[in-house]
Length: 129
Image (cartoon, rainbow, N blue to C red; front, side):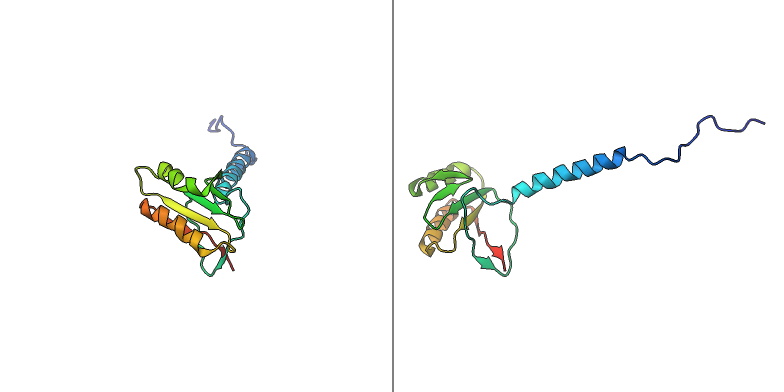
C-alpha cells in the first residue's frame, strides 16, 4: 500500500533562530542602558530611600564647581533659561536635575524655579542608599 510520506521530518534542533533572538536581546539591553546614563559632567548625587527611574526628557546638571550643562551641552548660568525654553517649547516636558550634593540649595531652587515657570515637571536625580 504505499502510505509512507514523501516529506521526512528532521529531528535535529536548529540553533540559528536562538542566536538571532540572543543577538536582538543584546542590542535591546545595550540601547536601553544608554537611556539611563547621567550627563557627561561628573556629579556626586545625594542619596534617597526611594529612587525612581524617570524618563529623562531634559537633563540639567550642576557640578560642585558650578559648571552647568543642559542635555550634555555645557552652558553658562545665564543661558539655562534660554536653553530650557527652546527645549520645552510648546510642550509640557520632564526636567531631571542632576545636582551635586555639595552645591548650595539656592542653585537647585533657581533652576527648579525656571523649569517650573516653563510648566515642566521637575525631578531631582538621586542614588539609592
